[in-house]
Amino acid sequence: MSIHYKSASASRVSISELMLPSYSNFNGKIHGGYILSLLDQIAFACASKHSRAYCVTASVDTVDFLNPIEVGELVTMRASINYVGRTSMVVGIRVEAENIQTGVVKHCNSSYFTMVARDDDGKSVEVDGLILENTTEIKRFLKAVKRIEMKRHRKEEFDRADFVPEEYLADLKTYKVKITCTDQL
Image 1: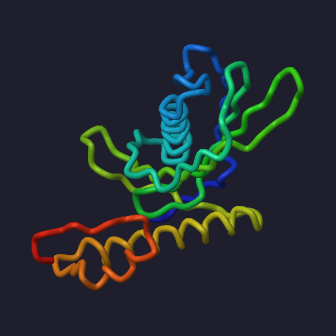
Image 2: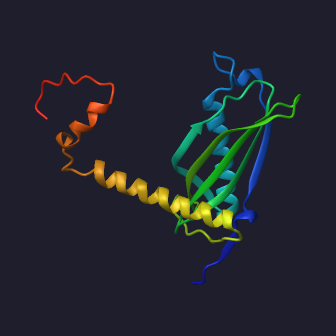
Image 3: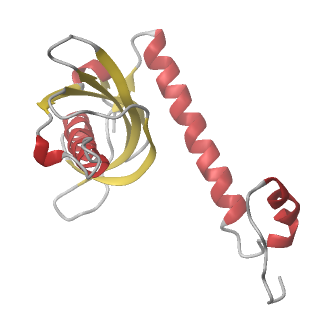
């Protein structure tokens, strides 16, 4: 079977939406949960466009809310495929909010969603390879590889059956915690 390749630009998706009062939280800012819902939708669209298959969210690697989004701002999300594996893709998403009265644009969020392509029976299917056309795309791919490696390392270190908390107790001295544990560690 020969591998097919698709450029990141062929799968790019962007959406813009005016932020309404009904999307706000108790503090009058746009609710983070609403933004997460939009992020998941655009990640799905981008991954499905690349794979030509139904895609599911496998993990959300990073969601850092950098700046609050105000009611009345125009939010634009841009998504592209940053990495492809056998059946998975990492979708990078940039979120910007524009004050439509002043024209001031602020970066509000950068997120990374891992999506998996599925067939009609729910089985994972192989996705097309990725053509890296410029330095930015190469950097995005390599950064995704590094995040995957770090995630794998964390899982190996902390999810193993022989994990020993005592080995990490000294690390807790630099944190704002008080240990009152009465059972034996």
